[in-house]
Amino acid sequence: MLEQKLSYESPKKRSWLRNLVLYGTVGLAALVGGCEGCGEKNEVSFLSGKDIYVVREDGSNKRNITNTPDEEETNYLWSGDGKRIAFNVIRHHEIFIINRDGTGLQKPSPTDLYNAAPSWSPDGTKIAFYAMSKLFVMNSDGSNVKQINGDIDLPIKWSPDGKMILTPSYATHPHQHIFIFLPAGPLLHDIEVAGPGTSWFSKSKLIIEKGEYWPQLGRGNYIKSNLKIYDLDTKQQTDLTSNIDGNFKSRPSLSPNGNQIAFLVDSDMYIIDVNGSNPKKLVGNVNDTPLWSSDGKKLLFKKDNDVYITDLSGRVTNITNTPNEEEKEPQWVP
Image (cartoon, rainbow, N blue to C red; front, side, top):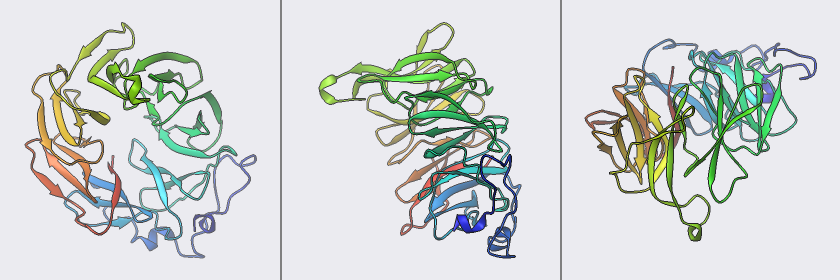
């Protein structure tokens, strides 16, 4: 159990967690085979069973990072430098942090509320998180915890320059709203959208979904919805997908070079140029948001119970190939 792996001081007294205890004298790195393969490029992580795993993109060298058979991890996210993972444990109300090689398990435990969905700032110095519909920000060592605002929802996303934080609104109804805050607290923008899957396009622009609301369908149900690029300064909107029919799902994903966007329509994965040209369907029956590799040549996604990669021609590779086990939350390792 994670509690058995940690020895730490009261949150009121500590500025960082110390005195790591891992099954007596046995380190967690030894349990997962040390750091073999650490530092490799193009690795993929995912949840399987109750633990976080890392594997090469060809499916080899699978490694259990957390190795906590009595606990179940969720809501995990890599720091931008790929050295640490912040995550939740389903039975606990705390945020945990672990090194890429499985060592250095820490528990900032910043509030007495349910602390969920940790989100690293781009420079790795701060973590934003959700606690009972409230947005908090803390230093990555668990110090200097500040409540930013209330009535927020998930996901929490930092702007590329780390100067703003985006969240959906929890309270707005029937229309969905997106809030954008400064990390120190003030609300900068309140934007009406058609879905919670808003993403950053740049430090001053968003990718949003807009549409015509049908109240008889209930909250969040729109027709004729369309992905748009929204300029925070001018409030101008540029259409991206007006010629594609269907229901948009999940969050759009911007390529590293900023030239293309990947997204789902129903369960079909598309890519499109950011000027709205050259839409292309790549893969069908996709379960969640496709994520770009750092070189912009591949997309990572979940399909049925497995984790897959596709190139931009639509050639698909199953990298987990465990049909009787479900992998979740696939991510590229930075």
